[in-house]
Image (cartoon, rainbow, N blue to C red; front, side, top):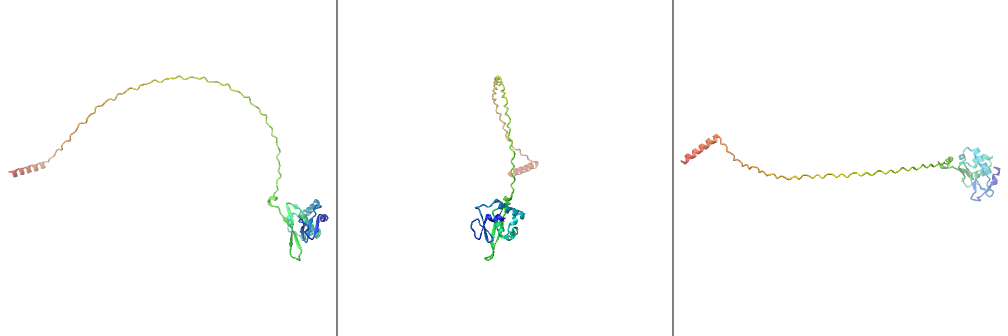
Length: 212
């Protein structure tokens, strides 16, 4: 980490939009000379050597990390600034500054931005199936056999005339009208009993005596 200072500009004030405040200092990447991949690889190797998971860096301050650099505060500040230029295990790093008071120093801590659930999905490698060339089978044309055309003989059916049968003429027979005999009603016969007859005789006798 001795060459880390050669890749950054250390200042008391912000000199560029890319300046990173760590504590009371501003660390600005020296883009004119380009930060070497060797330096960034060394920063990543320090992280992997001392932390089993990069998420453990979340909330770490200069005070928590300076033991990695023999208590050298400036080297620790450079280390924190360099982390913001890296993405390790899909995690990004930011430096958050908290000023506790006017006379109190600014406390800078690392903030780790974890990948989303979709970013953590491991994409399975796409295995392309071998391309099998299609072999075209030879086309065999079947011979065309023309069947002979056989004309069926035309047979004329004989015309049979049905005999005409004349229906006999039946003359209507006149029937004589028969008159029913006229039956005259019979007069009812009066039946006179013996007692009535005797009474009639007595009445007649009395009438005759009165006429005498």
